[in-house]
Image (cartoon, rainbow, N blue to C red; front, side):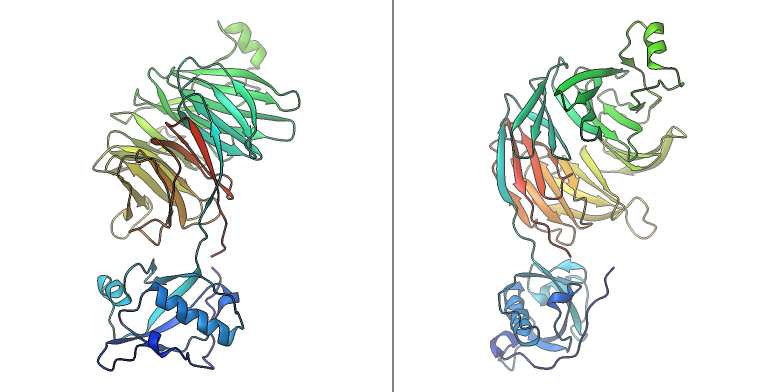
Length: 438
């Protein structure tokens, strides 16, 4: 982590109203610190009234910036006290955390994240239930049984029939300049692996993955793109090879075609049993480690080499989606109790649940981490809203992304600059996410 910038105070702020003028009013000593060096100010302790709030701290820090850094434009900041954003008065915030008012309180300030801006709305013929972005392409799956490919600029590029029931999940396997491959999972109990010749704009189903006996709800491809995991309403976790060239035993695809009744059938490498109800969320957390969330109120971590459960986390309600951040090495999960929870499966101190994010009014069915910022994630719910969160602000999201007229079914943040969400209003909404370096 970048070191915290600290320098000695040369001048004291002139705005006495911010510091508090009533002699009977309780005061607290604070010290401003930041990791954003361009906004560094002297760190001399300042006396402020105990009921000071974010707006007043913004006025104070901007005055200090004008005096010490010659920054004349007003900059909006958020303030971290005891590792959480200040969302009440300072005295209430530190009282909740048992911090003494006799201490000098470190107040870390970070540039406020700009609000994501609505960018596009892509109309489908039915519910948009799956979305994944790779490079300059958007892949969507719909309840009309179709897959669609779009450009990042919102142009419809290709429609792909093949499934005979709604598509529930999609994921990219590979992408280069002239070709790509991806997978789709459907209520028709199959996954299809597709090869796309981008130059000719021709898509072919290379494999139909058969094994699940009920609707497939989730699919995830591992980091080196060699394996994928699927979960379904049959409660089973299957691991598959993504290889286009060879079968699992090294047999060539042509030999396999001659030896089987259908050349396109792919069978799983392994099948793992352990959940008692539908698997609704899957994510790879390591080369041989998969994490699943289920309607049976559990999150399980699996070892794909040993084909067994490594860890189990119990919740109070159904889990509908999960995501893992390689940056922070923690898991977020959306639940039927309308909350998002943050879990640290590797925690050896205290509870595994590290935070609960409360704001949605309906089931939270989709969650996705930022790929570039360890603190940020999004959540989509049946209340028609996508919420933009910072883990340091569990009591309130940074932003509500509005626009959907029916429940949100899926979301994606693979491209750091674009947040996408699909819904039961037949639209894929795209928001521009302005990245801020913390």
